[in-house]
Image (cartoon, rainbow, N blue to C red; front, side, top):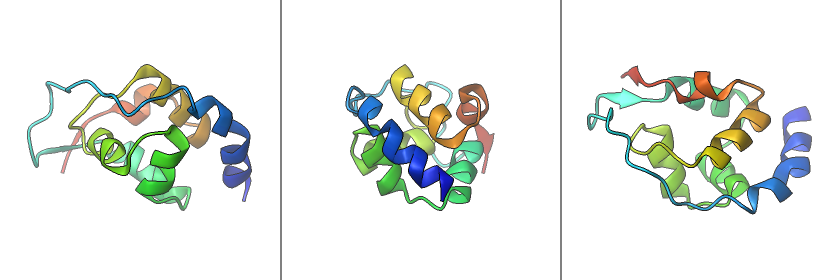
Length: 97
């Protein structure tokens, strides 16, 4: 799978990304989700744990980003854009459940 090959090629970049995330003030518990990010991950056939490992953060830290609870570091969004080949502005969009 091409995406998995890209994953291994990009893993070195991910070493610089930590699990530190900023609070996303637009988050309302249970009412927001980054649907485009979740859909991209599922389309790639990856689990949240696999994406978290790629980014060098905990699974819970990644879940908070995907669920819209945290903004995430810019380096993480750069890596996600490279991984999924979707512009990070699209991946970052918050949608209603």
